Image 1: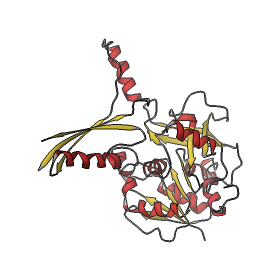
Image 2 (image 1 turned 120 degrees about the vertical axis):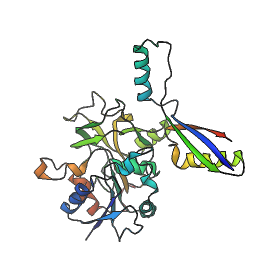
Image 3 (image 1 turned 30 degrees about the horizontal axis):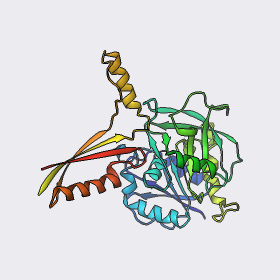
Image 4 (image 1 turned 90 degrees about the vertical axis):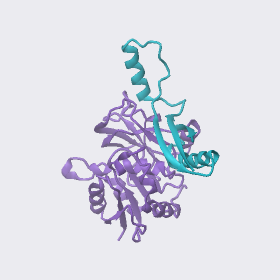
Length: 233
Length: 82
């Protein structure tokens, strides 16, 4: 059975939703504490949303130095799939496992609402179950979700198809007003090999038909079928 | 000896600083129309055991590069006092 480790930091608050999503997808999901250095034979690692270490200094800045992250980085370098959701995405950027940074929303306020997303890249560990161009709806809930990177990094992300999801209006049309100021309306990106993915929206909060939305389920099911030496990479 | 170090971390010049912009507008609304270029960052004070001011500075620079500032979005300055 596919084993998914959900890392808990002090201040994580979407750990249960992420664990539930992984189990619903059919994986054997379990928690790993931030002080642990053993991922317990994980096939996949997920960094959940929340406010690790109170977002002190910068979101994700302290969490990236927690003992478990050494193991997570080694796991990713060996090709292991790692998904960072919201605060997890911020941690991946702080750790240098994904390029760029997430800074305070351009309008300074916390944004908590459903957004539209265009699925731009299916050739990653977490998006193979979707089709390219598919419209997804998921909630966002963040204060520091503005994706920024230098011009060269942005150009490279676009040229190599590493923008995984992009914000749209709920009907899938181009954004009329920015969600958080993100450059190129970027909501999520992947690393070069597609095994590390981070996104600000919450697939974990859209992975249960009971909640009226299971658009995020694909982020959990895709990785079960993912072949690391993916065709086309 | 112990050196007192002041680190200032500010958003990088080319980046939009929404907090700075908001404060600039507020200042202007209060009548301080001569103000421009407001940028808001953070100040970090620390005390370091080092054998020289140079060493204290080098160590602090390493701390900034590793943790205190984000190299993607922020610049920093270091002041070492005796």
